[in-house]
Each structure stands twice: as structure tokens, then as C-alpha cells.
Image 1 (cartoon, rainbow, N blue to C red):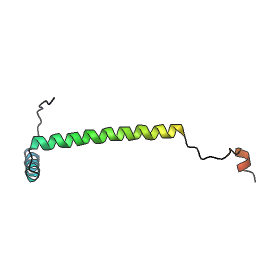
Image 2: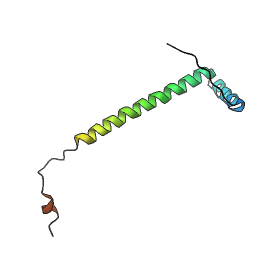
Image 3: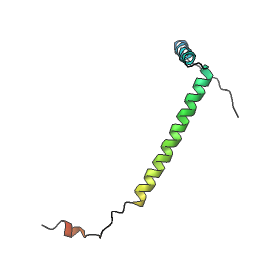
Length: 76
């Protein structure tokens, strides 16, 4: 479901934005909608990646082999 919103822009910014939209053969509204959708998608991907990375860190890493006591590693 789509919903309209009202935005206020500086006149010069809006003029430049209209030029960008025209160069891309689209409307200002469509360009804004696409950019906002892209922003939301990237934010969601970031959160998913962050959760995955934290889960991997919590699980730890298994490098195989036997555990060696710390004092054995640091004998002089």
C-alpha cells in the first residue's frame, strides 16, 4: 500500500533534484522512493550481517588440536 507524504526542500536543491530525475527519465517522486527503498534495504542488510557476525563470534572458532596449558606456552 502506498501513502503520500509532504516534503519541503530548498528551491535550489529541488531544481537540481528535478534535473537529476529528468536525466534518469523518471519523476522526482519515483527517484525519492527508489532512493529511500535502497536506503532501507542497505540498512536491513547491514543489521542481518551484523547479527550473523556476532553469532559467529559468540560460537567461537575451532582450530583443532589439543589445548595447551598457558603456563606451558610461556615457559622460559
